[in-house]
Length: 282
Image 1 (tube, rainbow, N blue to C red):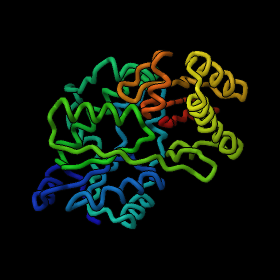
Image 2: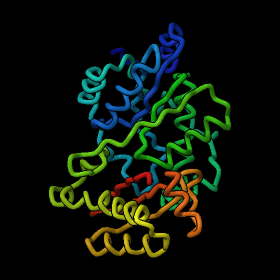
Image 3: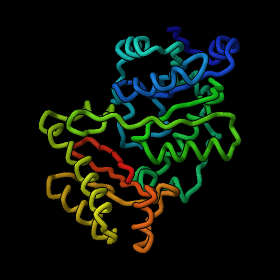
């Protein structure tokens, strides 16, 4: 695996390839990231992964400075997973001047759910992904489905800017008890880790209720919020949305959408100091 830290060197190296495949990460890699790398490997003639902790997508009170950086372990894991090139620019390399030009995703998609509770988050995500796309110039890029709204935002950005990139979704990897793998799981204490499975469990209960014919979305969401709150969580949202646009379904269309596999349940909640997100398609 070749490690590259500058844009010029990356472009010179990738000039020899016709179909780069790309997996962007912020490091602190787990099996979910590595599954994306293995999924991307056969999709191009060279596989590029990036490690860059993007300041633009962290709010002032969030964990940019303390976000885990596990460089040596990450390099070894990527090499073992078949990565050909690791692009690991410094902040000054990727943002040599303050990033005044930013990508503003549409409010209707980006200002709800994660965007509501983390204002400006998707501006930071879109801006860094657009810049990484400009550096790598991939023909295919793989993003995890655990970040469901982010995947939709990136797909929309690629489509509207007519970028010659195929965005591929990677399925969510889970621990044996159902907890979605996440870098932030490392923040959990042993007690919190045992409790954390109730987020995915609650989403499973919501999904099952929909399959059983429940159409009272407001009651279903409130019951889920109450359930986690009583267990000591601080939920941001536990919702049922249309997969198409992440808007709430009307009661009259729920049954048809369940039949068409057109719904998704999404949740974000804080357990102690750790904020976890998850989703399940219905």
